[in-house]
Structures are given as structure tokens and as C-alpha cells.
Image (tube, rainbow, N blue to C red; front, side):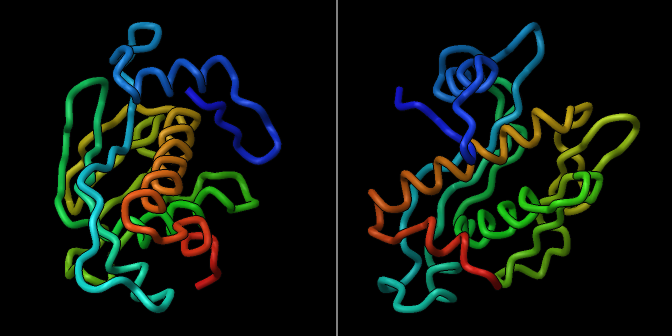
Length: 172
């Protein structure tokens, strides 16, 4: 497995263990199910994008929220570059990350299509009006988000030939 780095920091043993979980080695860490955001079946919804906006919306995939080996929520044809763009903005906040994350796609009428918010002493992930995974630590949620961004960067370029990093890092 290639080394993962976030910023200038090399991967920690927790990151290696969680990456191993994400890639099928196990579904728990220290007796706790690990949160993961998974993508599969990456494809273009329409012709190859010619603009930043088209890339945000045309690169789609099956997206799942998983606890351990169990998918607790799955949706198809999710514009993953748009989602990754918004997740990266949430991770980049300089203030303490007590601020909730809310994703609403330009392609959907569902408000708060995906969200993370602090609830009852931990963090909860939800889709629409339904919480799907709760009792999370901020570190676990941050790690799942970072691993999702890494997956998007690696797989989008190889599957559909779009520079995902350029698209998700561009200011809105």
C-alpha cells in the first residue's frame, strides 16, 4: 500500500490501521466500527467535462457511508467532485472544527443531502433528515473525510481522466 500523507505529516499508525480497514483488512479498530465514505463505479454523466463546473457535476459514482463492513447508506450517481470540493473546504477551516458540515448538491432538491454535526457529546453523520451514524469522534470523522478525498484524487484521474485535485482545490 502506498504511503498516505496529509499536508506535510506522514501517516500515523492509526491512519495505517484505518486505511487497512478501508481496504478490507478488518471492520473494527479497538472494538469499534470504523466510519468510511466509499466510492465505486466512477463514471461520467455526459460528455467529457470542458469546464470546472461541468467537472464538478459530471463525474459521478456510487457513494456509501459505512460503519465497519456495513453500508448504512448508499446513493448512486453522486457528483463526487462537488462533494469532495465541499468536504475539503470543511477540513480547511482554520477555526476549531465545531462547525457542522452540510452538503447540498446543485443536482438535488434535498436540503442537507449529507451532513456532519456535533450531537449528544459526539458527531453524527446524516443524509437528508435521517442520522445514519452517530457517536463519532471528530478525529474519526476527519480521518474518514481525508481518506475519501484521497480515494477521489487517485481514482477519478485513473478512471475518467479528470484531474480531481485541480477541481476540488479550486475556490468556488
